[in-house]
Image (tube, rainbow, N blue to C red; front, side, top):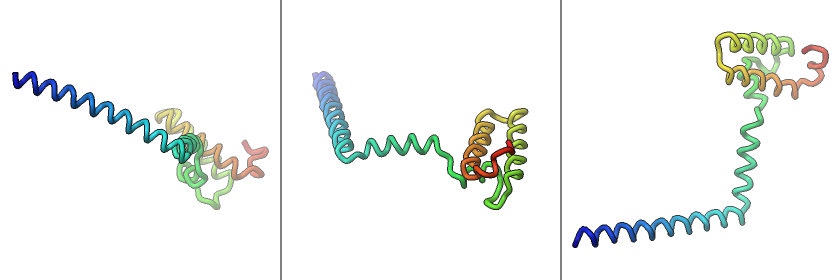
Length: 114
């Protein structure tokens, strides 16, 4: 009899906790949408995952701010080929994205030298 009572208390208590959790979650979503936090977080995730900074691109290619476009291309070709032979596709794509990023910052030097 005591086991049955204990089991009923556990089931009822977990049901109450589940409903309270759902209600708190809904309230948190409502508060976030009022403040615009959810939309801002989603925008930051989208922006952060697609955009590479110039500093990150330079670090990936191992070049400095004063490196010429020819040096950048030389490092790019070297790293791209190394990862094509025995590296990973992920690293190869990072190297390629780094070059694309630096192309945006060196538009005058890129013309005719690709």
